[in-house]
Image (tube, rainbow, N blue to C red; front, side, top):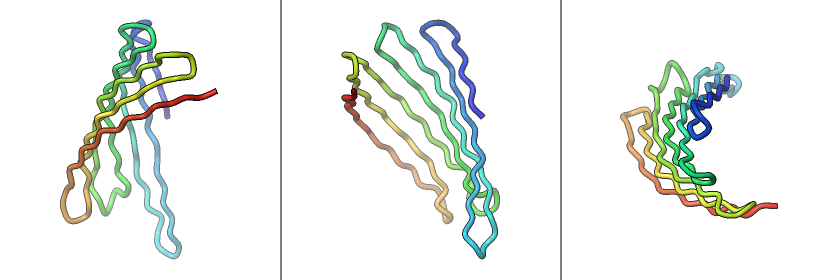
Length: 112
């Protein structure tokens, strides 16, 4: 399930929800969900500020819900060229407790 709603020409709200299915015969099939909600602000053309919240529940029986958040800056500085920096936080259920993780991800894309 996916939805996108333009609040204005510079503000977009997007969301997605998925059903997960894992099968490892002869074990039973595990069902879960994943979802995210993202707010995209474009104050000037080509410069985006994004805030994203996400959740994942791989199995309704064995693990709890994992959650995370992203804060991103995405700059389209030339045609076919963009630079993106993401600050990412995750809180995951590891089966015996919870684990907090933080990352900084930088990406440079050059494409045809």
